[in-house]
Image (tube, rainbow, N blue to C red):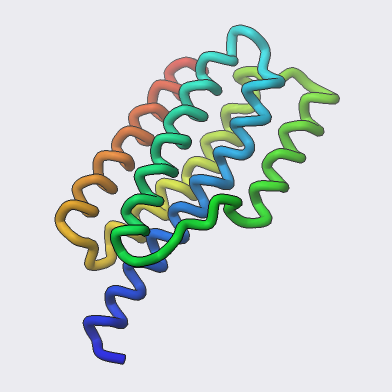
Length: 147
């Protein structure tokens, strides 16, 4: 394997890992939106919508790199759904969950950083940087909302 093909494989692996993490947190938000308190639901819907859009865009970047995106994410998708469902049985899904949301979202931000550290095409780098900034901005809004 040449250095260039090895670098391309690492770049594509980083995109696949980012896609998996995005799908994993999306699974949690899909459940969260259904179970959220009315005042928290709009914020959960914004995170869900952002991750849905990002998952599609990352899948397109993967396709351009010659790899098919895994639509199911990882085992963490199942865990995230279960955690949100179980929490809703004993507590409200409201602003109190934002610390856990921030922690989960940091894993996605880290995956963006890992993908951006790889030799992506200029177009991919630009899209990844935009998506990362959208997520960071929404996280900032969530922190401000929490107070």
